[in-house]
Length: 484
Image 1: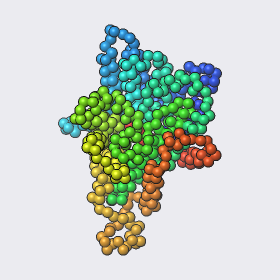
Image 2: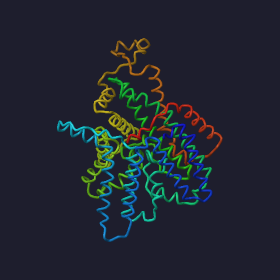
Image 3: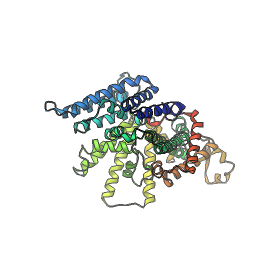
Image 4: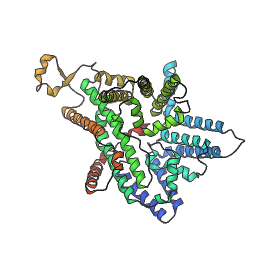
């Protein structure tokens, strides 16, 4: 079920909300938790009920293993059990997400003809697998002793964050559901939640889905791209991805807040970053936190010398790339960021500093170029876009300007048919400028939420965003991170 759908907004969410708080008002708190778990499983199954058994198997297995790890028992080798649990979870994720990738790689390397498994990727498997690995590690540390199966199930399945995060820790969610003051309707949280939900939906419906049209045409349909087309294509995807994923996280935060549950911020204006390290402090914050705390630091972090630090950084970004998708382009994207992070660390260690504008320009354009590999379905598609961006296919203007700017002919300027017409070029150019203004000059949604006041002006503004989105829900599209 999609957040940006009539079914969710006008049927599922109101029913779940009303019944949940009705049960809590009657002090049926255990029943309210069961209701929320059942509703979350229904929400998950709406997409494809075939995925449900896999989610339940993973849930029960990890709770049982976590319970075993949390017990004071001298006869069991907890470290071996933890390692086995991590391996099994990783194998579970790898089988469904990476089997065909490995088969294709083997076929290509050894000229073999192993049949592909063509497994359907279970929805949210990357997210709930990481969350449960965190749970196992913390159980090994003795930090999960008081949890029941119901508490754990609610942590894993809570529908606002289930499909595409943010990636949260058990101790950030379970205690909130145990708090008595969070069991009753809070109108301030409802208004604030609706505020952030509407902003997130507008990001998705009005901005991301519009950019998606040009990104899809440029990456998937155009055979070659000129200089201007290349930049329209790359920037369209750069902004589509940001407004799509941050929009989802805003909606998740808003929905959770309606239930008096606070989720962590996952984005903090990442395109304002002045270096790549700053970018990763701001982009997909909860993924970066997981990779840092549960992989980078256990590997030694920066405590074992410069060479080891650089190796650990590269390992982290290799894992990040591979986590995002089963393909060499994703791995290359991760390695690009890893190398850039190492260069940035070296640069800072030498005491070099760039002027802010130049630092921002380099950082943003590196991120933009790297996203080309993240989006492309193959290296050939990525090179197609990059050739256009760097002028290898020439600099030509759209045909419709030939008569208006014929004076430029004497300077060798040529004209060609673009993959989008002149109206779409104008729309794309204007929206790209608007997107730059939004990401660079305006407060982000979380900053707006912190300063939220339910004034008449704010109410009218949010109502307008919500109505616009509802009117355009006939153009429903899924969120990009559903694929990861």
